[in-house]
Image (cartoon, rainbow, N blue to C red; front, top):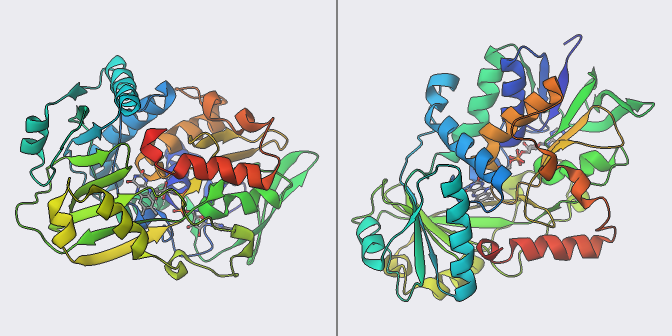
Length: 402
Ligand SMILES: Cc1cc2nc3c(=O)[nH]c(=O)nc-3n(C[C@H](O)[C@H](O)[C@H](O)COP(=O)(O)OP(=O)(O)OC[C@H]3O[C@@H](n4cnc5c(N)ncnc54)[C@H](O)[C@@H]3O)c2cc1C
């Protein structure tokens, strides 16, 4: 493509959404991926949304994203099977209760219905959940879940219909830049030129940035889930259940229950050491990690202990030192933008993250202002790789308590 406005590296949820929103506004976009479109971490997600975020900019983006999923089929021509099941979050400690209240309060400030429910009400809404000694249970009726595999490909195909060029199986080797300005990328199949490049390379995002001398403070970690065989009485519109202190989530999937969680010591992925051509399908998984989490919460989900596992999957989401994504310009290289550091919440954020980033690229500003999510917030720290890794792992471990 001659005279491209922007090159987006990575066709996961973040990159494909950004490409779609750029194309929708008339920009000439090239969406490049080293593998098949939308084939890496994004399709392996759980597909949960969560609106009750304590950080206002995140709560706004999550609210917008959730609404966008409801309109997805009308806009993108492909359904993501969004189910507005609502969500429950249960807290068992004083600190957890305060955390839960803060998230619900931010949601309510934005006009999102969010309330406390009794244990009996929670049991009625989600009969497979036994709340036990929960101190507080929050309910957000407008949360939901969707089919993860349809998100990135949905955005990418619609972007193509609007004129974007899709370049799967095209690995970006280097960023081209002259006098502090981005000029394009070098790929295994030749150069592509544009004044704007978006690094949305998921678990590889820091590698892509490093090739231009930019340090991106993100660390990929393995995250896994399983889906059981069908269980009688489990229904699609029963709410997602999250237990805050143990940091596990449970939702309906394929007639059974989906279970995932945030262990204390996740496997950190050393991206530079990954073999060339590595795909997420090659990632070694460990069901033992999930079984240990199930043991912790067995009293709350009695059906889980008896069920057999039908699907076990995982991917490499990227964590940041403060548990928030990195979205925006990269200082030091004009024209370079980043959409990374998903912190295991990027799929559900992607419609709004891509929309806001496209606006920032095309207009120089976005609503909401993405400054709080800029990489600049880390400019004075995390020089030492071990310090960065410890901070990122700390954000992953028992994620719902942060
Ligand atoms: C088990 C699990 C459960 C999850 N549950 C949820 C959830 O419930 N809700 C939620 O919101 N999020 C969830 N997530 C997180 C979610 O999957 C991620 O936030 C999201 O997929 C991130 O998308 P991405 O575009 O950054 O990465 P990816 O989907 O990995 O896309 C990055 C792309 O960049 C490409 N790429 C990399 N390097 C290059 C290069 N040099 N040249 C060209 N292309 C390149 C890759 O091939 C890849 O396709 C979950 C993740 C996992 C693993």
